[in-house]
Length: 91
Image 1: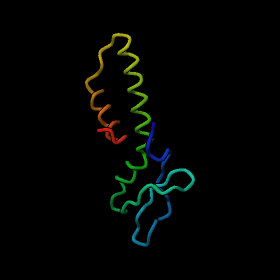
Image 2 (image 1 turned 180 degrees about the horizontal axis):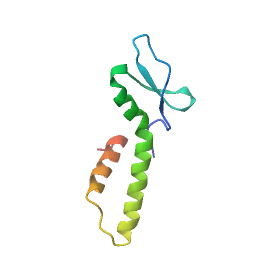
Image 3 (image 1 turned 180 degrees about the vertical axis):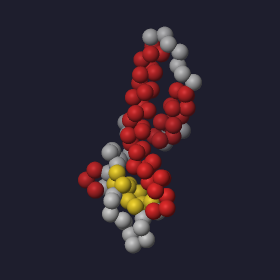
Image 4 (image 1 turned 90 degrees about the vertical axis):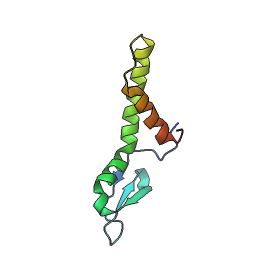
C-alpha cells in the first residue's frame, strides 16, 4: 500500500514565489514540495517519482512471475527492491 500522496504529480507552471521557486503538485492542487528554480532537474525527478515507483513495481511483479516459472532473478532486482523499500520507508 502506498503511503505517499497518489500521483500523478506535476510541476506547477506558475512560480510559487517571487524568488522563482517551483511547486510540485498532485491531483486536486495538493502541494507536494517547493523546489528552488536552480534545481529544476530535481523538481522533474520529484514530479516523476510516483510514475517511476509504479513502473518499478510492475517490473518487479514481472520478475516475480518469471522467477516462479524457474527463471533466474536479474542482478538489478535486489537494487530495485531496495529502492522500493526506501521509497516506502521500510529500509
